[in-house]
Each structure stands twice: as structure tokens, then as C-alpha cells.
Image (cartoon, rainbow over the protein chains, first blue to last red):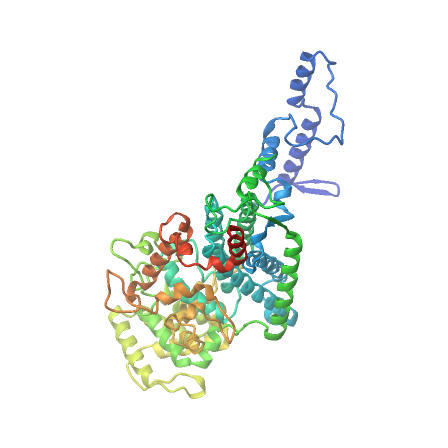
Amino acid sequence: MDQPAPYVHWGFFLISLPNLVLICVMLVLFALALVLPFPGKHRVAEAATAEGTSDTPQPEPAGVSMGIADDPAGGWTNSIRRLIDRRLPLRELLPTRQPYYVGSWVYVFGVVTIAALVWVVLSGMVLAFEGPQWWHVSPQGRFVNSLHFWAVQMFFIFMVLHLWGQYWGAGWRDGRATTWMIGVVIFLVSIVTAFTGYLAQQNFDSQWIAVNAKDAINASGAGVFFNPLNFGQMLGLHVMLLPILVTVLVVVHVVQIRMRGVVRPLGMDAKSQPAPVAGAPQ
Amino acid sequence: MSRVRHDKATYYRGIRMAPYDLVKELALAMAATLILILVLSAVLSSPDVPSVTIQSWARSDPVDFVTTAANELAGSSTSANYGPPYNANSGSVQTWGFFHPQTWAGIHQPVDSAGEFVITPLQLEAGNNSALTDALSSYQSASSDQQTTWLTNYSNALGNATTPNNTVVVPKGAYGPLPVLMDNLLSLAQDGALDGLLLVSAHFYQTDYTAPLLFMADGGYLPGLAQDQNLTGSQWGMMNETGRYPGQAWLWLYTMWYQVGPFNQSSGFFGVSGSNADLAVIVVMAVLTLLLIFVPFIPGLRDLPRWIPIHRLIWRRFYAEERIMRR
């Protein structure tokens, strides 16, 4: 397969045989899609006949608003819609009311962590776009790198404060254990992400961290798939795989919080629950 | 009523609800963090100590460079004796009882320290240098015992080396072709050519710096610079940063173990000592990490927040109102 391909030369037209085959396959697929019957068509027609209606099924009118729970349609899509509607309707995803005890600075740490993550990602995107050398030779690049550096510091500071707050409030209670566990995993993955970032800086810091860290990584056996001396590997992990993992986990973490709501204060079990207050949900 | 609304209505029964604007809170948080980040970046910038090159090493400390190269040839350097994932030796292999994952993982990035760091670059240079060609031929055709004798004599003499015009001169002795080899290697390094030669591979593109970094780590120059910046393992260096900037402070616990016994002691405890500290610290941190993940299920750990009433401060307004309502 590494030999030069045969070419078709017709007038001014010159194309390699593999490209020609590829384009022909696309044309054939498109033609087949135009003429082949679609499987669902027969089922709909049979259903219409059984109900004594015309052979041609009538389309549903567009723009008709129907509640998700009332939609009789089956299928995977509607099952997932119903599941999401049951577990996390929009009013819970973006709530306008919260228990009044949420009014504490400790609750702010989580949202500030997410805000810092946004700036980490945005400044990182600029650095990735310009390439790893840019910030060493350009004042603008150095400033963007500084934004990235301090955003990372903010991210970790508030993530740890958030972790402390959740620990001392025992935030895992009442069915929130997985929310806690995913939060800890986010912390761990963030540490690895930051570590690969330090290795991708291309300065003395990167060199020393690489040679200093290799012994522990090799001792654990992880050196076979994670070589801190390999700049390309570290850069790839830092700008692509690990940030995606952190972001996805943060989304899952936030969705879990929104699904279950914030935990009640410690000591407020069923026996000690206060009497209903006016305006409280019953 | 959806299931979640029903569950939350039950869960929050009796609790007063207050207006809450999630999007506004996030927007304010983003604005506040942006201002803070902008100010810090404008005032403090970020750390960027230039990287060390083979050239800067050879020019700044030629004796250390030549000593390291001689050790590579003698097979006595750290990388030459390392073991997996670089070679089949065992100098840096860490085990804890029957647990030796480094050996199990095997060789993954083969490194021939003498060949890659010294012989191959000299062979590439020797094309139009007859003296170097002869010296290489003389060294490679000598017996192993003869090579060892030359290297031992030369390494000992490097202790009395002088550096006129940034070259390395040793007292006269029986070193065979070694002075010629080392002079040429030092010259290559000081001209900057060795930086490129250590990255030569069969491919045009190169992003793997394993060879030059291992070579530099074998010397004393790079660790010396790290020592000056408080970056070595015994200086809590893993959580430190160059200059006056904060580093990876979140690694404090991992770093701490290296400062205390038995991880920093030559005489071990329960099979743990300085010789296998990396492996032991990783095992300890893995266990602690699992404990942190599974806190919700671990009696004692999950009860600490009840016993130490920091939550009384977090929810002080709630508890105050609860007291009033009970009166």
C-alpha cells in the first residue's frame, strides 16, 4: 500500500485511483439512498390501514406543543427525553429558588471554581492556537500564559476550598455519595492535567519536573504509557484528552447537584425537622 | 409533578426557600475571577526560566559535561544502570516485597546511554575528521578491560582537570583515545550541534526529548540549578516553582512523605526506605486517595464533620433560626 498509486488522466483531469474509487463509492451511496425504500415506510402504512384510514399516513401538524410526558411516541429518543424530564427538568437545572441556608460564602467556592475553569480553558485555547513556543518569544503570549497560569491557581484554590466546605458539611449525605466521589475524581484528573501542563511549558521548570518525576512514574509501572520526558505526548494529553475529561466530569458533577439539590444542614434529620414555614414547598 | 420535584418537595419540606439566580451568580463569579486573573497577570506575570541546553551545560560546566560523558561510556551513569523502561539493568528499579511493577512493565523506551549519548554523535561527526575516526576505531577495537582502565584513569584525572579557554585538560596519563573523543564531544556540545544530534532519529519530526533529558539528568549541572531554585525532592521541590511564584501546592501531601521516615531513611521500616521511596509513596497516596473517594462509606472519616462542628459556622443562620423556632 505504500507504493505510488495509479492515476487516471483524462484531458486536464488527473486523479489517483484511490480517490476516484472513494468518490465513486460516495456517488453510489447517494444514488442508493435516493431509490431504495426506507424500512419504516411500510410499518407506518400498515398501521394506517389497520386503523381504517387512508393508505397514505397523515403527517403530524408542525408546531403543535406537546408535553414530554404526554408524547406517546416510543423509541430511544423519547425514552431518554422522558428520563431527563423526570430526573432533571429545566426548572431544576436552572433553579430560581434555593433553600435559604444556601446563603453562605462556602457555597460560592463551587461556582468560582467553574468560573476559573472557564478562564483556564479559554486562555488555554489561545495558547494552543498559537503553539507552544509563542509565549516564550512574544509579550502578548507571555500575558496570555500568565492568564492561564493564574487561572489554574484560582481553579485549584477554589476547588480545594469547595472540597473542604463539602467535607465539613458532609455533602455526601442523603444519596449524594456519587456526587462527592466524582468531585474527588475531578480533583485527581485536574492534578494530572496541571502536571502535563507544567511538562509542556518548554522551559527549565518542565525539564526538571520531567526528570524528577520520571522515577516515581517508572517505579509505579506507569512509565510504559506515560513518559514525562516525551514532550509531544504530554502536550497532546494536556491540550486535548485531559481537559475534555475534566470538563465532562464537571458537567456530570453539576448535573448531579442540580438533580438532587443541595444537602440539608447536618443534624436536620426527620426527627429534628422544623415545622413547616409559610412559603415552603409542602 | 415530575419525580425530581416530588422528591425535592419531600426533602425540603418545612425549609423556607429563597430567591436564587444561578446564572447571575456564575456571571459575577466569572467577572470577579477575570479581574483577579487580569490583575495578577499584569502585575506578576508568570514564571519562565529558560530551558537548559546541552550547549549551555557544556559551556557553563565543561568538566561536569565531560565527566558525565565518561560515565556514560563506562556504563556507570544513572541512566546506564536504570532498568525498565529504558534498559534491562536494575540500578533504579524499586520493589516493595513481591510488588515490583517497574519490572513487570518492562522496557518500553530503550535507551543505550553510551551509544546514543556519546558514540553515535561522534560517529556522525567523524566523517571528515580523521583524528576522531582513528580515536573511535581505537576505542571500539580495544578490549573491555582496556576500555575500563582508560576510563578509570581518565575519570580519576578529571578531578584535577583545568579548563583553559573552556576546554577540559587533564594531567598526562594512560587514557588511550579518550581525550580525543571527549574533546570532540565537548566541542560538538559547546557549538550546539549535540543538542540536535541527540534528537536524530529516522523521522523528520521529533517531540520526544527522552535522550537529551536523561543525559542532562545524569550530570550534576541540571540538578545543581534545581537545587538553587529549591526544586529537589528533599526540598519539598515537587510543589515548588521557579522564581517567587506559587507552584503545584496541591501536591503538598505527596511531597511531604519524602521528607519523613521511613521514606527518607537508609534503614527501612516494613520494607520501605529511601531506596524505594517513590514506589512506597505512590502506594500510600493511592490508599489515601481511595479513602478520600470512599469517605461517604467509611465510618469515622464520614463522622468527623459531625464531631468537629465546623458545620455550625457554615449553617449558623439556619441553626440560629431553628433555635428560635423551637422556643
